[in-house]
Amino acid sequence: MRGEAFAVGAFPCNGVFMRLSEFWLAVSDEFGAEYGRVLTHDLVLDAVGGLTADQAIAAGVNTREIWIALCKASDVPSSRWYGVGQREPKK
Image (cartoon, rainbow, N blue to C red; front, side, top):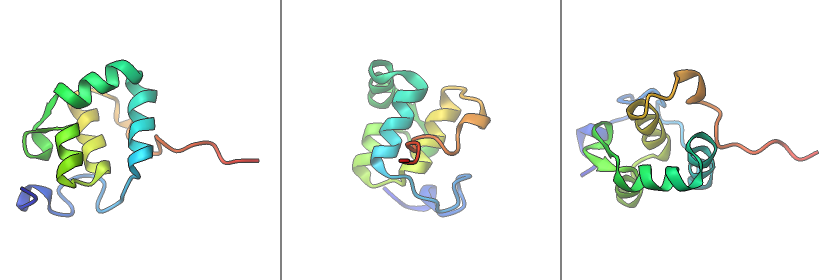
């Protein structure tokens, strides 16, 4: 399932990884916790092989790739694709 469709460079993330916790924080921040869960469960993402975000996570797809695919499919402005999911540094 992780053949050519998941080659490095196929997505703007270029091999940059996003922790799973950062992914879920980004989903919650962008879409809200409840709607975000609906999207990750139901929205089929062509950019990750026709899987939902939940299925892609289970298949081992890079979470940054999933995040960008989810953003594109949901018309999230590109200015909000990067740097999300990260907590403010502790002081």
